[in-house]
Picture 1 (cartoon, rainbow, N blue to C red):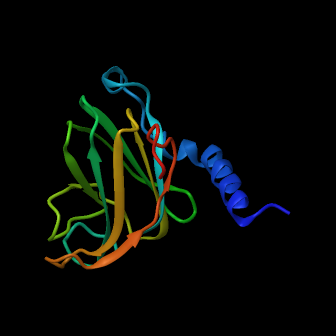
Picture 2: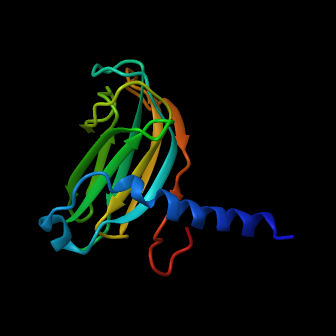
Picture 3: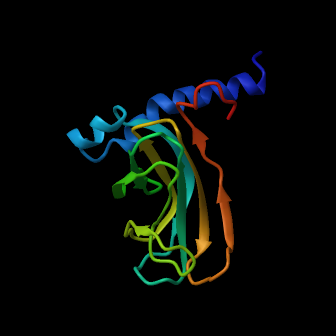
Length: 166
């Protein structure tokens, strides 16, 4: 009988194959591919929650990505609801040593790009980028708060950084 660790790794590999198309909802552009390469799935964050609406109240999901790539890269975000239906997509460029924050609706704490979504419960956020030299975290937050107040989402990393243990 395989160990729990081996079973977990096998399920992540299977999920990677099954969930890879989650981030390929927006068309790829020639300029995005010219930077470092084609989009690669980096993260899947389950547990996306949003109370809906554009104003900074209720709950929203925020994702922060940092690039240590030596050149400008492109990041693609895709949000799906619990049934797998597409809620929002966004593609943006990130410079070397830059941190970007994207939220599902406006928040008081983070100046961010906003992907306007409908109310979501138990959704998923997929992140792809033109380089693996990008790290991301995500949280479900109180959108009206001016101090950090929320729950960290634990994402699965795909395409790990070469030579690292993630």
